[in-house]
Length: 112
Length: 113
Image 1 (tube, chains in turn yellow, orange):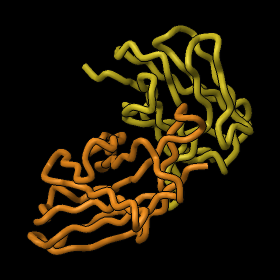
Image 2 (cartoon, helix red, strand yellow):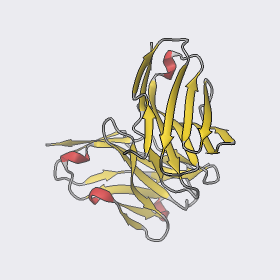
Image 3 (spheres, one colour):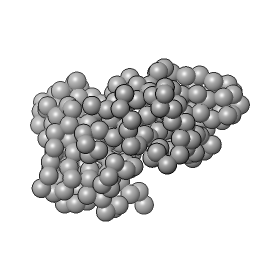
């Protein structure tokens, strides 16, 4: 079984709709991250969390919100999706100390 | 803030040829540097990690990278490319007081038969 799972894997939605992307992990890590990947831009950090009571904005948090429901679950929401948010979204986890990040398989989101 | 620059968004090599993917970090010496690989339709996975214990770091699938302080570089190499190496490669460095990781813009490697 995968250590970091993301649902859904693919989603097509319309402008103005609310969307939630979910991430679950079995690695026991406290740190979880949401990234967005666009061609030629690499990965940009949207939000990150070090425990259920600690949520931090990343570089591109506008238009997004997150919820850390438990140590193992970290959800990303788009309150009112826009076409500009069409991208590949990744969840990742890590242990403290600047160590390796473990990525989920990604969610491909298309906003029409 | 720490950052990395990857030169060349696309690199093409023939099967069996040397692979060289370039990464330069910003001026201060980082405690860690990473190379990640992303195969088509998959998430990123760690290829190798520099921790200052050794300047030459060996990773998975025959890849290695050499940390050169004088050149502020951490280039990724593989002596002989294989078709299965076709992927996108990302250099990365800890940032934000080591709470986060900043990724380069990626280099897509194409291997020509």
